[in-house]
Image (cartoon, rainbow, N blue to C red; front, side, top):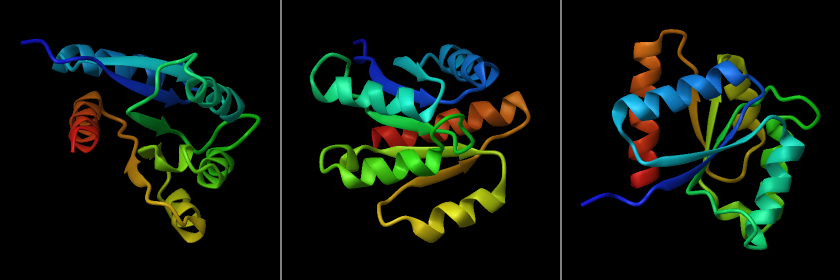
Length: 136
C-alpha cells in the first residue's frame, strides 16, 4: 500500500540545500511533496495562501534562519502571532550553533532545531530524523 505524500515547506535561499533535500528524499523513497520559499516573505505568503486553501497545508516547515528580506526568526515571530500558524510543526535547520541560542532565547512556541550537516551521508541521517519527527 502506498503512503500518501506529506507536504513539506522548505524555506531556504540556498538552492543547493533544496536539491540535497530532494535527493535525500528520493534515495530514502520517502513520500514528500516539497514546496519551496527562498525567503521569509515568500514563506509567509505561501502559508497565507494555504490558510485560504490555495496551497496545500504543510505537515511541517523546514526553516533556515539566515534568509534574505525577512529572517527565520522574524518568520517564527509571525507564526507565533497567528493562532492557526502557531500550530505548524517547525524544524529549524541551520549551520551555526550560536543561532540556536538566539532562537531558544526568544521562543515561546515549540520548535525543533537541527544543525545542517556538511556531509551528504549525515544529511541523509538528518532527513530520516525529520521524517520521524513529522510522522510522530
